[in-house]
Amino acid sequence: MAIYYGDGTNSSDGRTVQTIYGYGPTGETSSSSTSYVGTACSVDITPKASGNTIYISVYGGTCYAPVNDGISLTLYRKIGSGGYTAMNDTQGRPSQSFWRTFRNGATGQMGCAFQVKDSDYNSTSTITYKVYMKSINGSTVQFNNHHRDASSIQAKEVSGE
Image (cartoon, rainbow, N blue to C red; front, side, top):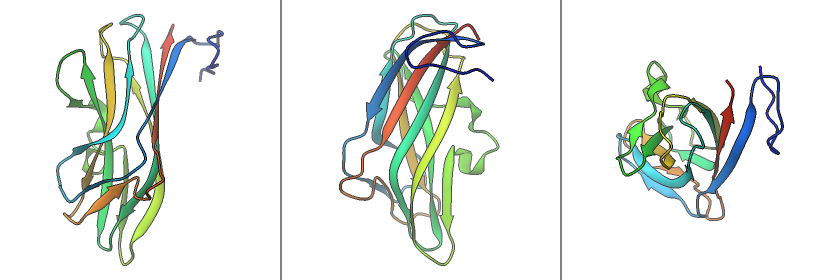
């Protein structure tokens, strides 16, 4: 296990090259789609080297799901001028999600958070990481469902791993 310092000092396994923060605006994203749709929570990072590792941390505002439905969140990536594609490591997870809740018998509101390691981007072009969401059963679900919620996302590039 490596320890990473925000000031770029060395840890036992690597060195933090840069840390970029992104914030979703206040206000919610609502959807009843059972396919992933983009939210406003994203971050852009331009890697210093294509062999480095990028750690993405998402801290969402409150997520809402009604009775007998749920919300799934995942991360999409866009490299340079390409299109958004789902991150690779979602196979085998519920609904290919990085974070998910399902509400049996009651509505639910809760904060969400997840982290992803990206080491297969092989580029020094700008990479955009963006949170996507979907409804599990087709009811309206919400990401940042309180009018003053704001999600945040962090991308940390680490060398030497």
